[in-house]
Amino acid sequence: MTEIQIRKAEKKDLLSIQRLLSTYFLDMENLGPEDFILAEMGGKITGCAAPVRGTYGDRNFLEIHSIAVHPNFRGKGIGKRLIDYIINTLKDPDNSDNPVCELYVRTGSPGFFEKLGFIRLPDTDKLHLWAECKNCEHFEGCTQHAMKYSRSVNYH
Ligand SMILES: CC(C)(COP(=O)(O)OP(=O)(O)OC[C@H]1O[C@@H](n2cnc3c(N)ncnc32)[C@H](O)[C@@H]1OP(=O)(O)O)[C@@H](O)C(=O)NCCC(=O)NCCS
Image (cartoon, rainbow, N blue to C red):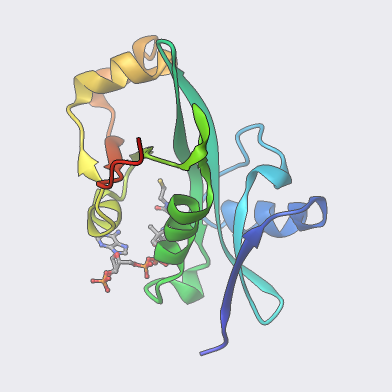
């Protein structure tokens, strides 16, 4: 298989990201192309994910948004590579000397994230973590699972 390169996106990647997300009826959620991490194979963008900063009380956290792998390339480890890159490369939003310690996601694909070490959170946690969940009229019937990854090594 052609080698998979994981890299930060640039302005020039805008159309490729939009095209990839539209495959799954997703949009960029007001993010810019530079907010995304990409998987590229032989010059073709085959996957993307956006680590987005959130706030919980006086703490900041990172949440994965808009993760998508091109339908022809699913099941080849690209999604895993994107998440591994985020976990291993990005810094903790509250302490830039440390690697990212916690990562959150709201997802309809919990099985994928469980494979990568995320655990499911109770639905009530969504109310604490995300203001838009608190104010959402669809909260009771929501099919999005809240999940969390915690780095096991203590860096402090
Ligand atoms: C979910 C998605 C990003 C996974 O990417 P991928 O490149 O296909 O996943 P990988 O090949 O890296 O899979 C890693 C592991 O997770 C498993 N996996 C992948 N998708 C899974 C799913 N939906 N349910 C359970 N397990 C899954 C794989 O079998 C693999 O397991 P293994 O290590 O035992 O072989 C991709 O399928 C996708 O784009 N789906 C559509 C968009 C979407 O649902 N995005 C999530 C919105 S939050």
